[in-house]
Image (cartoon, rainbow, N blue to C red):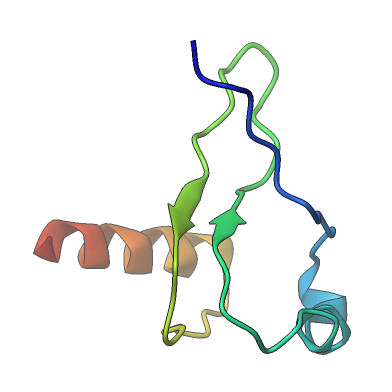
Length: 78
């Protein structure tokens, strides 16, 4: 049986503090996990996205609906 893995660091994220949060992450090679918001009551938690990265692509959206539509459009291309 494999040993349980835990990341060494975990920091909360909110868009309002994004610049401060990103500055707190060392500019060194590593592996990260992106976690979405907590699930609605009675729903299972979403699986985190795990990877190494050389860049981060993003799109600014103006609403929750536009965010969902943007995610849908991107996933549909995969």
